[in-house]
Structures are given as C-alpha cells and as structure tokens.
Length: 259
Ligand SMILES: Nc1ncnc2c1ncn2[C@@H]1O[C@H](COP(=O)(O)OP(=O)(O)OP(=O)(O)O)[C@@H](O)[C@H]1O
Ligand SMILES: [Mg+2]
Image 1 (cartoon, rainbow, N blue to C red):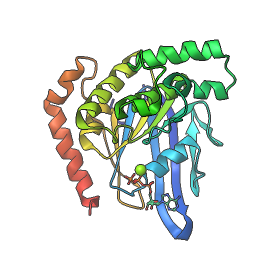
Image 2: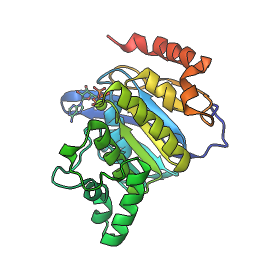
Image 3: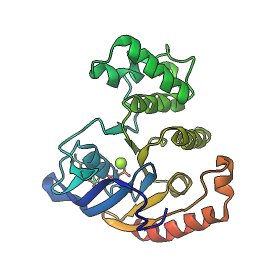
C-alpha cells in the first residue's frame, strides 16, 4: 500500500480528534487518520500517549472533546455493530464456557441458540480452539483466552476489528503464534484491523500502515508503510531485508518520545 493510493477504500477516518480528560489532562490532540479497508493499521507510541484513548474514541466508547470519527463517510454516534473491540484483558465471563463466551455478543442481539452455536463453533474452529468449547476461562492458557476473545469479536461479523495490545499478556512464543494466526485469519476473513501495540517488531510484522504517535498529548508523528510481501509464506516475513530496516526506521522516529 502506498500513501495516497486511492484504489484503497478508506473505511474509517478520524478528523481532528482531541480528548481532554478531567483536570485538564490532554490525552490526544488533533489526530486525523485514514484507515484503509481490509488492511491492518498498527498504532504505536510511548506509554500514556493516548493509544487506548484513541481506540475507545473509534469504538464510540468515549466522546472526543474535539473532532469526529466517520465510518464510510458517516459520523459515528456511539458503539455500533460495524466495529468490534478486542480487549487486552480478554474480558471473558468467568462463569461461562468458551462456547457461551464466544456466543455472548450474538445472544445480546437475540440470535437463536442453534444459530449462535453454529456461528460460535465456526469461529472457535477458525481460531484453533475446537475441542475446548466446553472449558471455562480458568481452564485455558492466556493464549487460549485471547483466542476466545478474538473468536467472540469475529462472531459479531463487524468489518472493523479494534484490538488494544491483544497479545501483550502472553509469553513470546505464544505471541508469535497468535501473530501468525491473526495474519492467516486475515487471509480468510477480509477485516479492517486497527491494532494498538507498543512492540515495533509486532507492528512491522503485522501492519500495512504503522501510525506513530508522539508522547502525550498524542498526535500523529509519522506514518510508515511497511510494504512487506504478506501474500507468501508468513514464516518468511521476518527474514525479508526490509523487515529489520523498518524496525530501525520506526525506532529512530519513536525514540525521541521515549523518556
Ligand atoms: N479515564 C481517564 N481519566 C483521566 N485521565 C485518563 C483516563 N484514561 C486515560 N487517562 C490519561 O490519558 C493519557 C493517555 O492514556 P491512554 O490509556 O490512552 O494511554 P496509552 O497510550 O494507551 O498508554 P499505555 O501504552 O500505557 O497503554 C494518560 O496520561 C492517562 O493517564
Ligand atoms: Mg493503553
């Protein structure tokens, strides 16, 4: 994807987003961002720069102090079925099984039990959890809980997935596996993903567009387009010469904001 390449539909955009919390904490300032459809946009920035705040604004959970969020050119008025949020802390119901947790969003929408189970099982299979549908969250590993959260977000069938550091609570091996699985999944399901991370490597590995936020108040410092070949073998992504160059390039852009 190249900057300004208008063959990519912009499915979501923010215009001049500003957020000021109580006691005049300015979290975000004038964030205008174009998010291309069916691509992965990573948001990277130092701790406390407003990444989660930006994601919540896009999800419609926080009303910005300034600016607007538009989906397909239409201003959002709150949360909607076009955007699904995957939380960092999984947000699973401890008393419900994997199957029930995954079907939770459908249940809230009044979908019948039979259809709920069919749809949930489809996504449980897609995230690699088949056989675990009757387990409870405490019987799962961190990675499995994360997959359950992802399957739940997928059942809602939103075009846009919002993910806030989804893999930060798991160990390095599991994180790599989940990253691979996400890329494989995106080859099957055409989703637009906005992915908050504080890992430069993760951003370069996953993203078509990496948005670098400055320190608080967060504003867009830079946008990098990795243009890594993602069509071929996923294993080869980290071995492309561009990969390390990009990690360096992004680090030199980011380091001035890290105290
Ligand atoms: N509900 C709130 N009320 C007041 N201040 C808040 C609130 N939520 C966040 N903040 C402040 O806004 C700033 C941005 O917070 P945010 O959680 O968006 O940052 P972040 O980039 O996601 O950080 P991290 O990388 O640590 O997750 C921080 O200074 C934080 O203290
Ligand atoms: Mg955060």
